[in-house]
Amino acid sequence: MLRHGTRVNNWMSDPFKYPEAPIHRGKVLSKEDLERLGGFARYKDVDGDGIGYRTLPGTDHPAAAYFVRGSGHNEKSQYSERPDDFERNMERINRKFETARSFVPRPEVITTGKTKVGIIAYGTSHWAIVESRDQLQREYNFETDYLRLRAYPFTREVHDFIEKHERVYIVEQNRDAQMLSLLKLDIRPELATRLRSVAHIHGLPLDARSVTDEIMTMEGK
Image (tube, rainbow, N blue to C red):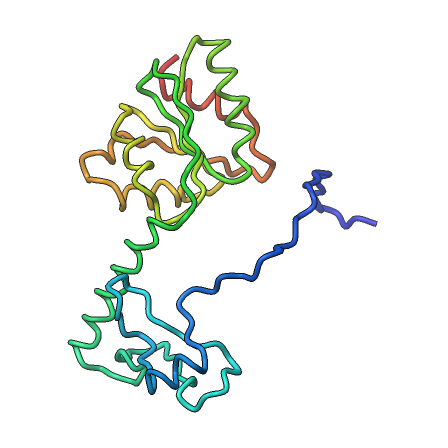
């Protein structure tokens, strides 16, 4: 029995394939590593990529344990209120963020070579965008390019897409247009005026007609 107000979508997904290879857990130090090094500093950037080495719970070595602090700390994860420790942490996190751009999944980009108008969307909005682009082309002879975001932080392809288009519609299912705000923070300030929000917030799955009508309204057609 369904309670009043319950929404049910009978959408199925393909079975998930369980990983066959061991999971690569990044920069992890083993017992042997710790014996060779004698210890480690959890938040020290030894490689210049902003990512510190860590140990996994249960590692059989006295130097494996470390405290995790939500307050200010130094490279050894010890409590600190020193300005220089805080500044080093902020600089390291920024390097870590920039490093991540090279490792996250790249966006899917579809270009027609015929237009200066683009659409950016992500997640389950994808299929509505596919249908909306067909509607825009058939009904209005209005061509669009499309970039489907697949990760954050944004990769260089996202910046390039915005730079190549005069108007870019950011389609998202978020009242406050959060993705639009993130993009504005990431790109050059002079490009922010190219971005336009298509925020879908009426509680039902995104449909193509809503996207098509709103884009055409903003285009003045």
